[in-house]
Amino acid sequence: MKNFQKFSLKQKLLWISIIAGILTVILATIGLMSYERVTYRKNMVEELSTQAEIIGYNASSALVFNDPISAQSTLSALKAKTGITSAGIYNAQGQLFATYFAIEKGTMPETLSDLDDRYFFEQSHLEMFKRIMLEGEFIGVIYLQHDLKAFKTRLALYAIIVIGVFVITQILSFFVVSLLQQKIIHPLIGLTKAAQVVSDKKDYSIRVEKESQDEIGSLVDGFNEMLTQIQARDIELQKARDGLEVQVKDRTRDLEQEIQVRKIAEVALRDSEDKWRRLFEEALDAIFVADTVTGEILDCNYAATILIGRSKQEIIGQLQRILHPQAEAGEQFSDTFKKHRTDAEGRILEAQVITKDGTIKDVEIRASIINLGGKKVLQGAFRDISERKIAEQKLQHAMEELARSNSELQQFAYVASHDLQEPLRMVASFSQLLEKRYKDKLGKEADEFIGFVVDGANRMQLLINDLLQYSRVGTRGRPFESIDMNVILGQAITNLRIAIEESKAIITNTELPVVVADETQMTQLMQNLIGNAIKFSKESYPNIHIAAHQEQDEWVFSVKDNGIGISPEYYERIFIIFQRLHNRTEYSGTGIGLAICKRIIDRHGGKIWVTSEPENGSTFYFTIPIRERRV
Image 1: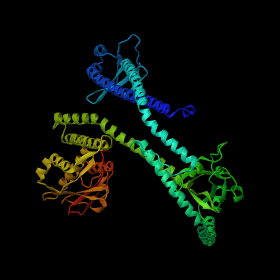
Image 2: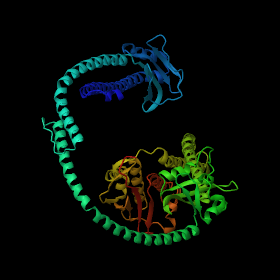
Image 3: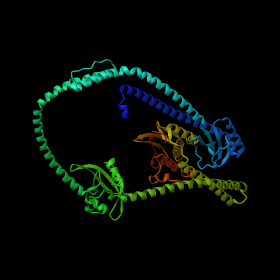
Image 4: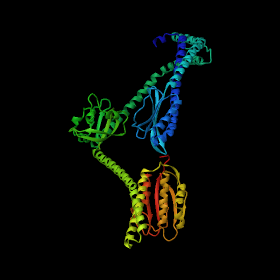
């Protein structure tokens, strides 16, 4: 770089042109190579993924019927695909099922621990693992390995092209710069001579002749304008010298006034510092004042001595790290102080302090930079939150235990209801068979007992089905998406068509909104509420009205009927699983419908409740939060 300063302007322009050309070609090459690398890899991944899906589809039957020979035959079709060096099929347990090698030393894993879709590039090849699905069920994994020889060949070709372009560009640049140098340099030489004359003779009346309208011409105009302004300022400077004495007198008078104002301010500052000192000492929070550079503690209040169990004499003069348990050797002050000094001003941070007897306490720290005695210092207010931390830990532990317990109960309900289906069907079937074959043969009392068994088995099967449906609300829910509640209401009415026709129910509604929710569960919710309104109607025809309105950030829906109503003391009980207010002879069912409704609303983050008067109908309300995106 030092030698470059010794070059003539002509040589500098030539070297600048050469260097610019080199940088341009290098940047273009990097961009081209990067784009080619990314595009080629992307296309290779897409092509190999498509090939894996085709092979997986063709090999699915071989996996299902455990036919390695058919799977091997399917992989043999890869001989027509150049670049694929090896392939394999793994079963659902990750065991190697069939292989294909295009080269003699091809390798692949014997077993797989990770059965997810994935791919990764090695130095010489691309490896891809693709799950094989059959009717939504995972049955195996296809493995493909593709070499990168074609990509490296393309890169070598690009390198040759870039070298050729670089050589031609430098030759053309040399000739073009040589032709343009003279026209650029000549006006600059004239400008240099004029500047030398001005410097030597202090003659600001000299002007340089303008030869072109380009940037050099603008430079000449600027140089001439600069000389004009210097000449004008020289005249103004002489005038300013003449009035300097008057300005000095005026400034002296202003300084005397400023001194008087400063004295008044100093008195006010002393009063302010006295007030700060009283607030400082009487504050309930522990306050420490430290140097912003060294971390030395300059002052503290009485609450600070109580917090860490040390006297002021033991605290003042120590480094700030004495307050914290993480005082590593070799550090001048703790990480907490560093955070306060840089970006934590005005924010509340949580940290720990250590007392004189070694007790560690959790604290909240609010740090701020203040001006104390003309010096900027760090003031930190420490509040003891040890008891709150203990309470938070207990609450967190309780929440985790509750979540685990709920998960186990939910799984138990699903497994129990699912596993009881088969033996219960067997009991019901054989009881019905016993009733059919031996009716009127074992006596009236035996027929009655058999009837009790059949009825009990049927009711137990109904209860288990309802329990299974209840447990699936949280585990088998679909993703939330935008759905029209008018369409949902139509689906529910269609599902209840027979009950509506038999009861001659009248169902009306206002315009319902579009919400983000689980379509299937919203249909079940509407169906349960309307079905209950029909079931618990009086002798007159059921009259049901559905409406909705917006309140802040949620939609409030209502389902109103003219049925038998509910007493206020049962408002909460009706939403509990298997809780019934009437016997089975009056109204059928297991008492799980409203419990499912509540579970659906809980999953959607809403609330459900009822208002009612006995014999005057009921109104069920539920809310759905307003969401703007797919969940």
